[in-house]
Image 1 (spheres, chains in turn purple, orange):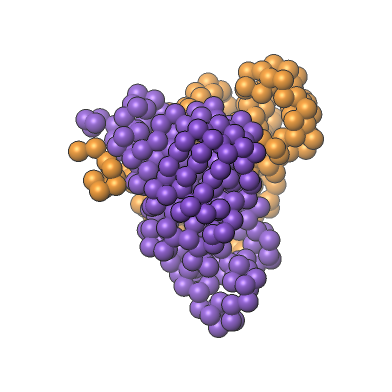
Image 2 (cartoon, one colour):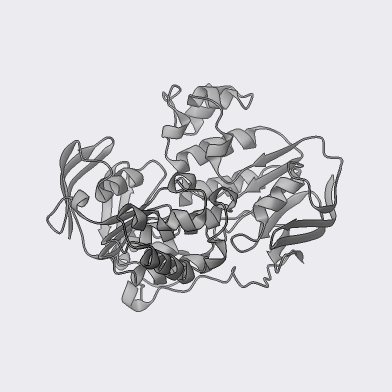
Length: 224
Length: 212
């Protein structure tokens, strides 16, 4: 479990929250604290007060993959291939293995045709896909995706769901503004003004948002 | 008031785009898969990119604005107040109305991306213009803000062209267009797609927690 206890960090305040393994979607209005929570879970930031642990240990002890909400901040290298390969190269993975793994993850996300392209010339959606591939390439135990789907269409989101479900990551924590995507995950954390308003399975959380824009479109007109 | 694409061609390595069509007053929606050329077409229609061939004719359009898909590309001020002022607008009322009251001195790039998008679009929509090109205007906005934006778009006159993947929170669309197979297709007032990427998203599988 991801355990959060006595957390106070900026505008975020969470007394107790347990997030089970699987795909968790963090939802809420802009400015509700989603990115702050994701950065703490990824171990990028450390809490001012309280603790965040994953399986009882610090997030910083885990192998993590992270996708930033600003797509350009995921791109450090000049070509798509170099960008996706970077985390493997930093850990001195042998070149043949790196090449094979880059080819494999690019094929899974259907971006093999982009590998030789300059990263700066990509479309918004292609930048997002490159960031996701780079976060997945080293098979992280923890995958944190912040607004990774802002520039993607529903068909691509469905493909990514398949890839991340089979990636081997024990914990996938993502922030999305597509409630149909969130409803397809295992667990939902709904933030309101820096507090956890609701947490549970999609079936437990989304009925509380019926008749609001946060109720999944594919559930509308169905009995809860 | 009209913008017309006549045999517009873009060729960039293996990428090609061909576009013909007339965009009159009302709200237009241009969809298409990732990498199909939506942003390229927006830049061409704004006159910021020259096509490899063909012409773009604007008739009776005295002013135009392009909102880029990444709001961070528009930032020129180092504070929220400077950013609003850079659009020729009085910062106080905008910041108060958008929920940023008292944050005049904050760095725009310290906002969350959704907040930055909201502020950017508020500034854009306060500037009257005949032709408004909005590239992925709904991305990063929360569901409530998407609804608000739809209402604001519906309330403006002139020509508005949305380049977007959004399907759920849209104003009433007068004309649908789609880029598929390297060409811009006119679907008129009804939504039909060739690529199939605008299908209704699937109902969640029961095992994933969808209601019975």
